[in-house]
Amino acid sequence: MSEASYFVALEGVTRYGLGEAVKNILRGALNHAFFPSPPELRIQCDKAMEWHEAQAEKVRGRERENEEFHRQQLGVPTPRTEGGKARQQAAYAAFCASRYRHARRAMEEAERADIRARYGITDESIAGIKDRPNPADRTKKSA
Image 1 (cartoon, rainbow, N blue to C red):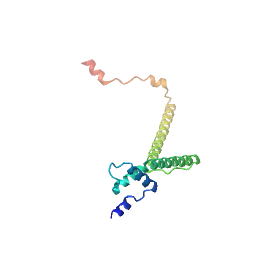
Image 2 (cartoon, rainbow, N blue to C red; image 1 turned 90 degrees about the vertical axis):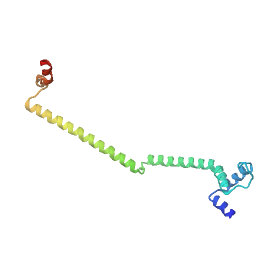
Image 3 (tube, one colour; image 1 turned 180 degrees about the vertical axis):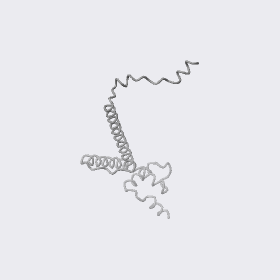
Image 4 (cartoon, rainbow, N blue to C red; image 1 turned 120 degrees about the horizontal axis):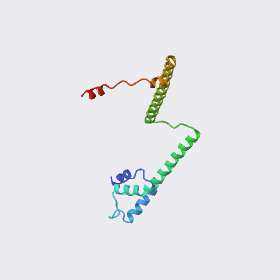
């Protein structure tokens, strides 16, 4: 039964990791006699492999960065996420709204210029029109 529990605990452990764990246990890493329990042995194996796994993850990260760089250099589009698609659609909708808003303003200004030209309205004639008196000013004077 105990042999089976060691096999279960050591599943996926490399020969190097097991050898390093045994060396560390013999050097007193457990602070007790040599015969470790299966979980203690697995913990020591995992500690022995931490540095190697971290280095392997760095290499995988660099490979992903290189792939992304080459994909960009070749002009291959990267797959978009749902969030990226939503941001792109929102940006496009905002662009279209601003573009049509500017076009509508330009069209309204052209209509106003046409009306002014048709009826002979100039800036001087508009400046000559007096402002409407404010009703609030009359009540203050009479009080």
